[in-house]
Length: 287
Image 1: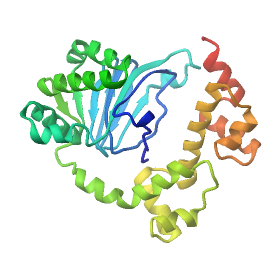
Image 2 (image 1 turned 60 degrees about the vertical axis):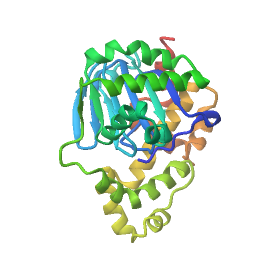
Image 3 (image 1 turned 90 degrees about the vertical axis):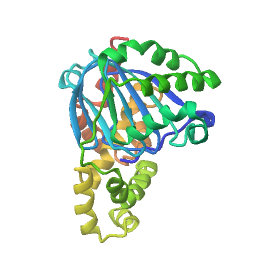
């Protein structure tokens, strides 16, 4: 899934400090670099061809267009919202500090770091604890101060040797990029149109494939059928709307792309195990 990241007010850096019942975003990629720090939580991380467990204190740097997905342990998915994952996500454009890296030796270490990030980098929990204050400071500031603190954080990440690469030795980012040339166009379309009616023929035409060939291609690349993938996106969006509590269930149904309320309720319960009303109650009962 190609994620389109919105930078509020055209800011250079986006930072989110979140506490959620579980990670919700599916397997995806985006042009921006991403730093993910898990303050409290556990599960499995999928980065390129790497599959590993993660625990509290996990710190990773994900390169531009590198596919990734963090899945919470089942104990979070089955806790009815009693357990929470707490994490910080920092995202910045793939041309961030491009001129400085090219022209000033003081930035060369950061340039090397971002180049290594094309395979994903996981830092040790011991190192992550040492620089946790830098991450939290970054999550609590904004404007120019945020850019300064991000450079300090990147410099600290660049200097340490306490890390390892996540993608395997034979993983080729170029192959991924080439393969995604067709897939990216499709996912960009889905990412901006999943709230509307999606026709198989329309999406297949975007990929320049016959509908039957497209179905095979899409299932191979995403592990899901087109309808399953779109429904996942719609339910994920509906969950966010329900948590906000500003719209009725009927409004959320249509806002998230379902033109039939009973179909929405049925699909929502299949995905989450709850009715929309119960989901809201479970999420907010501890607040």
